[in-house]
Amino acid sequence: MIDCHVHIENQEYTKEFLLKAVNVAISRGITKLYLLDHTHKFIEFKHIYDKGITDLRTKKIFNKKFAISIKEYINFINEMKKEKFPIQILFGLEVCYFDNLEDEYYKIISNYNFDFLIGSIHFIDGFGFDINEELWINKDINSLYQRYYSLMINLCNTKHYTILGHPDSINVF
Image (cartoon, rainbow, N blue to C red; front, side, top):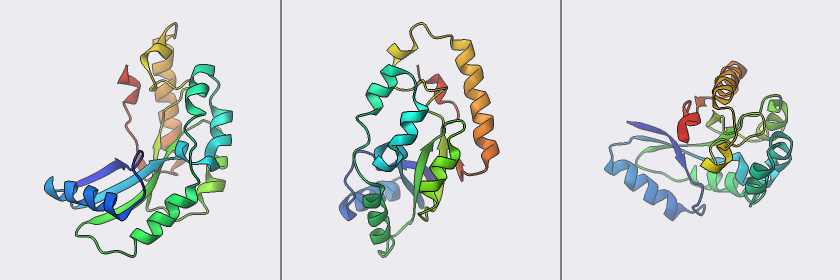
């Protein structure tokens, strides 16, 4: 079995963390583990989110997320790739898709050698639809759904991603 979407997110980049994840994977019959982090964790991507997020409530929430440099993650990946684990481990990045900002992402991402990239939609024209239910108040739900799937088609057509992330996350609320 393969698990292709395991976030490190709130964990420290340590071998101890990785060994715990490996042990859980083994206990569940997983033989290949895809570990990743979100681009919104890394300060190198903040300017893209500043351009991509237009909803002020969403912007306020996201301005708190950019905590570390992607170099910390890359150093962790490089160190862990020197180790031997009983299952295969791949390291990647979940990229929040913003229409028309792909080139800016790839100026950064192309500097690194990730095993995979997950393309995900967390924003619809600057609106962070999966943050909390209150943000949906006074929104046109039908238009948001139509735009979400239009963006999903655009994301797929970029062919930049190895994996499509949670294609139904619009349903979260």
